[in-house]
Figure 1 (spheres, protein in one colour):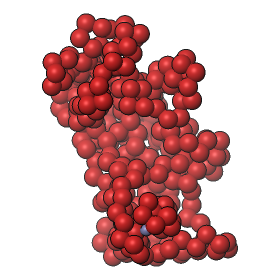
Figure 2 (figure 1 turned 90 degrees about the horizontal axis):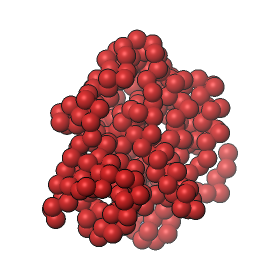
Figure 3 (figure 1 turned 90 degrees about the vertical axis):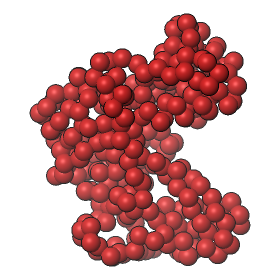
Length: 282
Ligand SMILES: [Zn+2]
C-alpha cells in the first residue's frame, strides 16, 4: 500500500495490482489510448486521503469518478501502480526502432526520476474547485474557453470522430483541441466550435494546444533516446500499451534487486548499447 500525491493535490492510498486487474488489462486493445487503463483504477484504489481541488471527490473509501479526474493525475497514479506492483517497477525498458539505421535497441528510463511531474497551476486548481472552464487569449486575439483533459472530455472527442466515420485511435490536433474547448469567441455550440477549429491555421492549433497543456498538470512523456551503435538521436512518446506497461518483466534479464530504496545504485543509465536479439526466445 502506498500514498500517492497526484499533481493536482489529490492524495490517494493505492494497493498493488491483483490477478483480476491483470485479466481486466488483458481485455484492452494494444492501441495507445489512455482510457485503456481505466479498468484498473478501481482495482488499485484503497481510499482517498485528500480530494485536492475536486469538489466531487470525498475523503474515504468512495471511489472517485475516474473519468472526471485530470489525465495528469491518472498518469501519475499509473506510474505509482507500476512502482508498487513490479520488482524494480521504477525502471521501465522499452524497445526503440532506430530511425537512423533501422535496428532495434533497448532504452531504459527511471519513471521516478526521469519523468518529473508538472504540478497543477493555482489558477487551474481554482477553476476545478469552482467547476468553471479556463480562458485564454491567443496571440491573434482569439478568445478560447476550455476544460483540462479528462477521460470524459476524450469520450466526447471519440464520439465526434466516430460520427465523422473515422477510426477513433489516432486523434489529430483538431480532435484533441475539440475535446477540451467549450467556447471560441462567441461560438459555444459544439458544431460551431468544430468549424472554427477546422478553419484555424496549424500555428493557431499548436498555440491553443500548448496554452492548454501549460495550464494542465501531468508527466512529460516525450523521451529523448540515442542509439549507441550509430549515434542517431530521436524523441519518442513513452509507450503505454496497457498489456506491457504493467506486465511482469519477461525472461532474459534478471532484475538486479527488488529494493525500491532511493539509495539504490542500480544503473539509471539507458542500456542503449544492448542490441535486441529478436531470435532469442527463451
Ligand atoms: Zn541506429
